Each structure stands twice: as structure tokens, then as C-alpha cells.
Length: 425
Ligand SMILES: Cc1cc2nc3c(=O)[nH]c(=O)nc-3n(C[C@H](O)[C@H](O)[C@H](O)COP(=O)(O)OP(=O)(O)OC[C@H]3O[C@@H](n4cnc5c(N)ncnc54)[C@H](O)[C@@H]3O)c2cc1C
Image 1 (spheres, protein in one colour):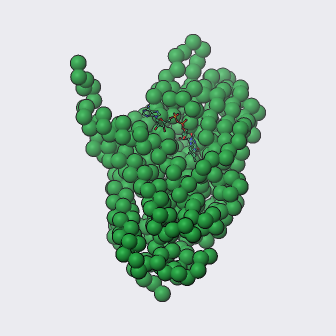
Image 2 (cartoon, rainbow, N blue to C red):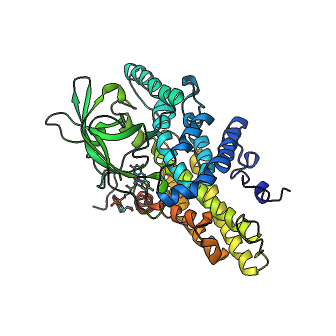
Image 3 (cartoon, rainbow, N blue to C red):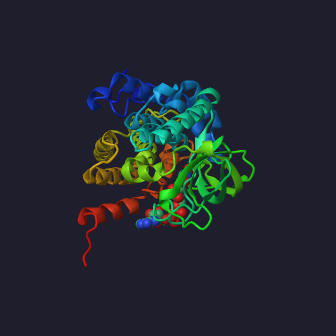
């Protein structure tokens, strides 16, 4: 039986978060997103609890995503991939996030290696020679994903001001014959010990040269490269299955063809394609939907693993659900607009909207999970049910650099009140 909640009440696939006809999605786009939703419900959901409990990385999900063609979602079609653009990727990733936050978040780290080197780089300026070399290098990197199911991660954070964009990365690449020698440390590196390649952001720095953000390099370092080591433990509140331990690089030789973007292009992307940092939000958009879905099923007495007790007839529950619905629709509308207008050289108003969307998704995902627990009651927060994990996972969203909730507010406030170059002197 299908109801206004789509197929939610008969099985566990859930209706599309963004109905194709309502949001004007193309057929191919809608099908890819639907594939992600079916995959999430069938494959990710049953495995999520165990990996969360044990804080183990769900590598089998990535092997299965390879079989589904999802590891290649953002590899350009000309290079043998699925050719998803920014919005399509975000919508598909949100569907995965509904079923396993940790997998969706780790998947994002992998996909960025293809999205940033692919569609984003195509929008940016390079000399003809750099473009030709880049196309050749990225093709080799894509073949590893397409043929071998190689998985990439994205160690970016260092525990200092670099990840927020304030200063150059402290991890450094010293030019040497045929490549670079990399030294440094990355914290919170999701997929540590599981990825085949670490997509490391670092600063190229020659002898006597000052460190500069302009010289940021994006290098694919093989996980088994001599001198690369995973250290420390991982026992966090949420997103436990991302296994985001610390990576240490000590005199690691990296060949020049490990560059995922040519020199200068990461810096150009960070300034001219700012929505590149919005890609952490789809996971949490999915978690927001998951919290709402849970409340509906639970209050209808249809949650598997719980007695078929209905709680929907109480006016207080109905008001709480109405408030959750309003919050969810507000979040979806703003986020959909922001991901739809992602492009090179966005207008100031579009950048402020992207910050507002990131802030809204990250804060509202956790607010919805908290409200779902309060509304559904004590039995709903038992670890045998997904809501408890959704609550903990969603708490992590607003902490994620470079666009934490605080940094988003900081930038919106400043940029709304000051035009570029304006001071009060
Ligand atoms: C589950 C999970 C997975 C992650 N996976 C990855 C990953 O794969 N790769 C990766 O690189 N990172 C990853 N991160 C790391 C993440 O981006 C942060 O670096 C991490 O949360 C550590 O932040 P911190 O406490 O060191 O932040 P700090 O730099 O100590 O900042 C603390 C807070 O101060 C505020 N703040 C910082 N700088 C400024 C500023 N300039 N202006 C205003 N406010 C500021 C921010 O709100 C920030 O939250 C992950 C984080 C989580 C929670």
C-alpha cells in the first residue's frame, strides 16, 4: 500500500527526498539518485549499526559501490564514468546519508578526488600544456577507480588554522627529481587504513621559499607508500565508521603524476568555485530526512523491531511532527537552491546562500534528530534502533571544516556588512 509517504510504510526504501517532477530533475539524474536510494536501503542500512558500534570501516560498502558504478559517479563520461555534475552528486549522496551517515561522509572524500579533478577543474583556467597534462594524469587516476575499485580519501585537516583556509597547509611537498618529498600530519583522516590513496592537500615549498596558500598541491599518495603511517585511535561520539585516524607522512616520495590538480589550480578552485566545500552537507541532508522518516514510521506504529503501538493520535505529537516537517522543508528548499547554483565565479549573494545552506543543514539535521527523540520517547533512543545513531552522527556536521557552523556565521556577518576591501578607518 502506498500513502502520501510514498512507499515508506510498506518497506524501507523511503520515497525520493527530492521528487523528480517537483524539483525538475532530468530522467538520467533522477535514475542515478534513485539507484543510490535503493542501494542505501538494501546494502548500507543493514550494515550500519555494527560498524557504528565497533568503529570499523565498512569497506564492503565501497566494494559494492564499485560494482554499482557509484565509485565512478563523478568521473566524466568521456573517461568512462557516470558523469554526474555537482547537483546530481549531492542529491545521490544525500540518499546514501539517509541509510548510513559514515558511509556517505567517507564516500564524499572519495568522490571529491574525481569531482575536483573533473567537472570543477574543467571550469578553471589552465594553460593548454597544463590542461593536456592534467587530462592525461586524471585519466590514469580514474582508471584505477574504474578497473580496480580503488578508493580515495581526502586528508585536509591538520589541527591548526590551515583547514579553515587561514594559512598554508603545514604538510609540505619539497620538489625533488621526478616528484616530491612529503612531510606532515593530517588529523581526522576518514578512511585511514582503508583507502588505497590519500588525496592529500599540502604546500609545495622549495628551498628558502615562504609557505603560501597559492602553492597548495593536491596529491594522490598511495596508502602503502614507504613513510606513510596511520597512528592514534578513533573512538568518537558519532560518525564512528568513518575511522578518521591520524596520518603521518615522513619523507614520503610521491611522483609528479600523483598531482590530482595542476599547480595553482586548487587555490583557484578554493577562491573561484567556493561551493566545492559544500560537498560535506549532503550526508547531513540525508540524516535530517532520516530523523523525520523515523518519527513518522515510529508514531504510526510501523517501525520494524518495535511493537505496533500507534502514538500519532496525540495532538502534541502532531504538532511536533508539523514543526519537524516545516524545518525539513525549509532545509531542503534552501539546500536545493544552493546546490543548483554551484558554479565557477558565483555572485556574492550565491556564496552567502551557500554558507547559509551549509549552516542550516548541519544545525537542522541535529535539531531534527533531537526533536525526533523527544517526540518518539524513551524506547526510540535505544541503541537497537537507528535514531540514536542518527542523533550522534548528525551532531558532527557543524564541526566540519572548512565551513563549520561558526565559520559560516562569521563569514555571512562580515560579508553582508562589508564589500570587498571596505574598512572602517
Ligand atoms: C566525523 C568526522 C570526519 C572527518 N573527516 C575528515 C576527513 O576525511 N578529512 C579531513 O581533512 N577532515 C575531516 N574531519 C575534520 C574536520 O574538518 C575538523 O578538522 C575536525 O572536526 C577538527 O576540528 P578542530 O577541533 O581541530 O577545529 P579547530 O581548528 O580547533 O576549530 C575549533 C572550532 O573553532 C572554530 N574556528 C576555527 N577557525 C576559525 C576561524 N578562522 N574563524 C572562526 N571560527 C573558527 C570552528 O567553528 C571550529 O569548529 C572530520 C571531522 C569529523 C567530525
